[in-house]
Amino acid sequence: MSEQQKTVLVIGGGFSGLTAAVETAEAGFNVVIVEKTPFFGGRVTQLNKYFPKLCPPNCGLEINFKRIKNSADITFYTQAEVEKISGQEGNYDVTIKLAPRFINDKCVGCNACNEACPVEIPNEFNFGLDKTKAAYITHNQAFPFKYVIDGKACKGKACSKCAEACKYDAIDLDMKPETVNLKVGAVVLATGWDLYDVSKLDILGGGKIRNVVTNMQMERLAAPNGPTGGKILRPSDGKEVKNIAFVQCAGSRDENHLPYCSYICCMASLKQATYLREQYPDSKVRIFYIDIRTPGRYEQFFWKVKEDPNVTLTKGKVAKIEEDTRTGDVTLVVEDVMSGKKIKEKYDMVVLAAGMVPSTKASKIPGDISYTDEGFVMAGALKKGMFAVGTLKSPVDVARSVQDATGVAIKSIQSARRS
Image (cartoon, rainbow, N blue to C red; front, top):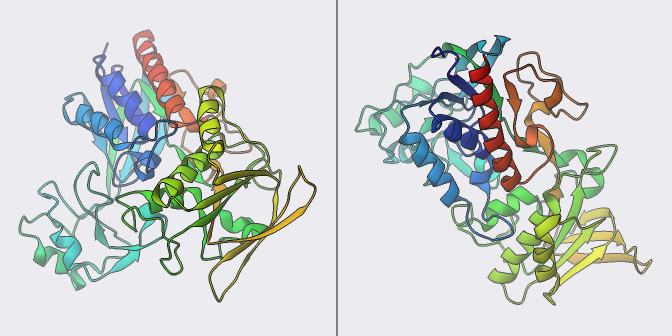
């Protein structure tokens, strides 16, 4: 095989993309990873713990990061997006656009640029729960461990405080966008998922109530490297959360929003209930659901959480969420299906189990690719030599994404050999 045939492009540096990349490379093939953000790991880096083992995700990520660093067969680009894919199996032409990072490989991660930077921006890694500087790194185990400067917020040479503070000459405010052209034999699509926009959910507060957060914001609140150092405090006033409600299917299974089940939401809320119960032994949790879905082995985790006397599960759809602007407390109005009664209760904070949306809903991957109305890639209609992974095909959890990525690694190798 030629080097071109023996090269596999992986679009997306989340857990599934990384898995596909390292498994393919360790089988003796060249791999190029393209990631649109400054860092690898995707949504998994924003999680506090996995379900059902309740272990932190950094262990698995660190292993994959090490495998990438130790592999001479893997090339990667961050802040990069694929602009064009053309050709056929064994002979794909790919054009990649690289955005400037404004920090070069001399960076040692000393944090001097962050300390010197006068510009603050919303922290996207923490879903806007706090702010960060325009020169930043997302967390202490980020990969690559190299700072980045937000080009939209940075004042450039009119400021230059970061460059003056850097002792290693790692700041380059003159960096320009670049274009890279590749020839590859196969392409793996692994661009991941986004959280459903809860501002569209008017009856659930429309994203305007201070102490109504999304499930991913809850992950960041509970994470040791999150905005509160792992303490579950409500955003409005920093009060400890002792009484919390979870609202399931926030956008999912609704023909006006997402007509499908997002698969992970029930397990995520059950997991997050344990966060609060472990941190505050006197806390109370109530989960409002349409149906609790915990497929396969996850059923045992459901039973364990359900047995906690301070956790209540109520079958009923939330009809309204209101805010007490004086106290910051949140009131829910729900019809209890089992009792037939209307419930109106007040909570310190409410978590919306927001649905999972494929990234391709908002940003299509260039090339001859077909999508469903919901934005998922139609895997069966892909050209030979192109493969979709994990949440691009349907909502799945991390474990299933990794399994799928391993399978796709084998398929991409078979494709290269075929061509």
